[in-house]
Image 1 (cartoon, rainbow, N blue to C red):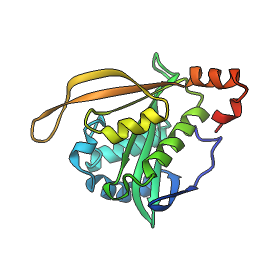
Image 2 (image 1 turned 120 degrees about the vertical axis):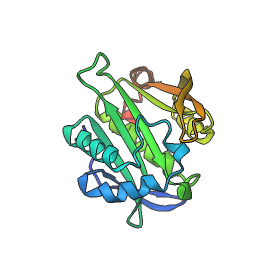
Image 3 (image 1 turned 120 degrees about the horizontal axis):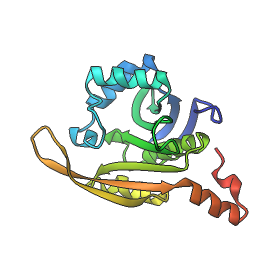
Length: 197
């Protein structure tokens, strides 16, 4: 899925230089430490709790199977973010991908999330996907604003969709981005290279 992009790649952010690399089984311990350092609320939009070792192991199995591509954002040898592109070529929606992204508290607001989301978006373009979705709890305003700035628009509100460890229910917002329409608009303006990975 990432043939058109070479890794590792680097980006300069306000948090310093960030290395992006594809996640592999060798990263399991580092990703588990990263996930355990995240507030539980930040994990609610994910289908499973990635701070559980068995869930992380299953995630890596999906990476090795080719169903998921995950990018790690690494600063000074420590995982500070993860962007994942999920797609199912055998479903009724092989043209649609889902982005899942989490970033450490200590680098938020410093451009790491933006760089990671742009890199994950580029992976989706390289995979030939036509539409992307992303979901998060409605109170994650900074994340919603970030994805809206990339052209995502609200498509659904799922009320009481997830329940946290204290039993409190939370709403989930689903944002979508029609890549095919975006590419067609750029081509109409003579700018197709703007969306090439």
